[in-house]
Image 1 (cartoon, rainbow, N blue to C red):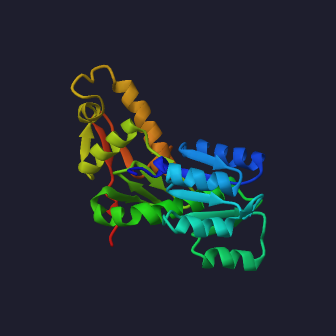
Image 2 (tube, rainbow, N blue to C red):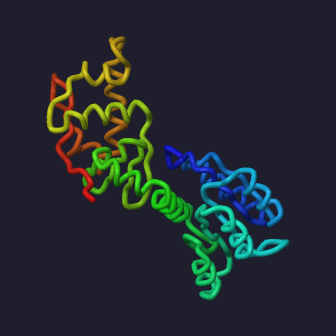
Length: 241
């Protein structure tokens, strides 16, 4: 898995409306590799065939319970498990976490809370060592952490994904951080040597990039315009171990 949004997710719940709702929440945030199951039997089959990289698991199922199902999964895989249950008793929460679950959320829940906890699990499980090895690909701009390798921006309350062209622009600016990068150099980095006529398109991409990396895109402090010349990424700092 090179990108957090490529994760294969198995969603297990016996309520069709909850399955549909959670799947839609995930899809809207970019998680498209999602399989669903409504009972233990189907979940075991899907787990074996799909080899999910994360499981979202209900506790109460028609032919068993999520705790037993997680024990079965753990026999062959260390895929993280996030319990999503209507049961809010402390004993159930402690049992789930004690069995090795990575997190436990009770219904009803906020979509943003689910996404934040899910992405935190995925980053911790699959990307923590990767990020430590690639410190030069981590750029911190104020409250935003930019993972230049994967094109993901982490903020205190959400994850933002850069498009391929936005990422190419940011990488070029970061390579010359603190210095002016001309319009021509930026256009060449995105569209190659046949970039003529893309000046207005470049401005659009710069504006969208600012919307993702700036606290206030209308008053940028990181990505500055140097009138008549190009743009400059103000020196931030790299994450240190």
